[in-house]
Length: 260
Image (cartoon, rainbow, N blue to C red; front, side, top):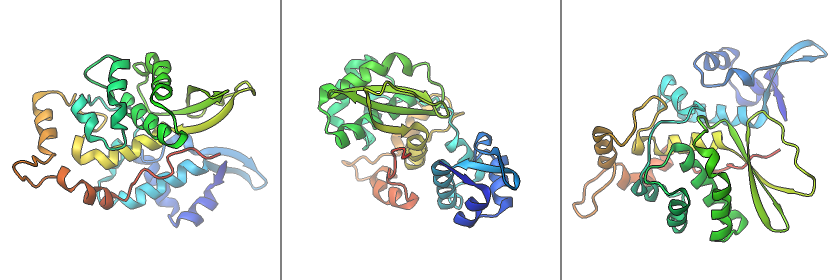
């Protein structure tokens, strides 16, 4: 579904100048500005759900971050940060009962950002679709060979089933998918939306941006460790105040599913 530029400005209360400044600052992707013919001539349209979510996010966070910081966080480029098992345990959106299964299936010690997003999505799917551990792990098993080649988050993850067997398709954001009608589409998840919320929610914890070096260097690992509280010593840190931090950035992983 599309929304016209006129409708967008009226609905969000932003100005023409703001909209195009955010485009120049790479806060809004250029490909979202789509020229189409209308009865008045050429008119600009946007993917409605995506642009409204993006503007809401910018409005909520522009006073907390610089436009440059926002642009890095909203970039579809995958961050080069690596995550170890200890990091996975700190991400509350990941089902911790699934962690040993995820680890066994991927058979590695350091996980990419794309893999983290898949863990988060699968954990949410397990809860919403009432999947068992085997069904959830099977979805990861079917996708794992493709994850290392994914360098951006500009994808839609589609979950469908046939006779209670669940399958996944990963497609480029703007590419149409025509499935055999014998399959039922259950969920469509924009990885960009999940990524944006992850980056904002955990930015102070993992300090990730697309241009950072791998977190597992000695200096970055130390910085990451310092962001958590040592409960035995009573240190007052960002991690000990994670509830306040989450409320501060006003992002609680709502509306993570694509709705068409």
